[in-house]
Length: 186
Image (cartoon, rainbow, N blue to C red; front, side, top):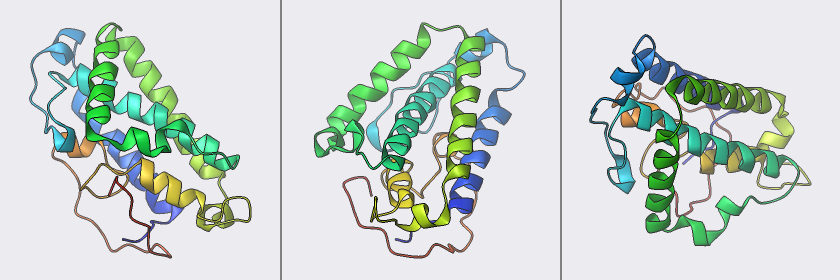
């Protein structure tokens, strides 16, 4: 497995967001809360509606943004601790995040989703190539951390909503620079 370039990662995250927003834009809150079967992915069924899917993707984006910010400062985020890599823990997190999102109005959930996603793209855009590929303060590179946290187990990196909506675009050739160390995520 190869670590994608920062530009490829940003492109996939941007496209993933566009796929989700393309599916939900223009729908009423009632339509978003209506029963909707999403592809459950590796950790089981937990989303009953598009509103749930937004909450689910948002929860992981918030966690991943925090992990990215910690990595930039040379620290390891709690979510990277091996104790959190258990599939049962992932299922519990998914259910909790979706349940929390059900208590929010759709307009606020979408506002939060947009705000978090904008922060992700801005933060990724500020990372230098040197830091992405490895730097003295983080020898593995920020890219390795980003790749790890934005990879759904068994799926291509930097796709999330597209996986649950069965709309992952065909993978172009990867132009990353080095192999990725395997983890429990991939």
